[in-house]
Length: 152
Image (tube, rainbow, N blue to C red; front, side, top):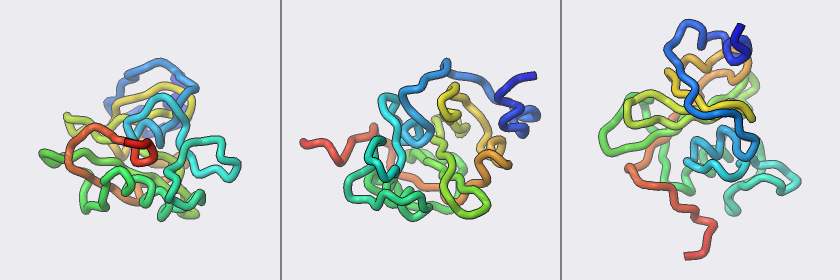
């Protein structure tokens, strides 16, 4: 048995592929924001990165605000749109954020699975008990991430 498929059983019936080895230096939120050198999370201990102007609360609104700091706005569809990059934020049954994925140029999605591998996948293949479901999709005009917390 594949441990990833045990953890995320909908992957068994989808076409996914592992795109990088395990790495403990970043998480899914960072990866969705196109960063692979830090953890992003609104922890109260200020251990993880989080945009300074966004409340450090584990709410969908805080995650929406965090990505809006990087130019993302809510949109209606996860479908590929020319000229835009998208992120999807997952929430559990209580509405707490659990995961984020980033759309790639093929229209598929990429995710960092906790401290495990990165994978390329269909968006709905991650829905289930572990991550819940997609609560919001956000988009911005295609560009490389620029950190608004860094001095120019």
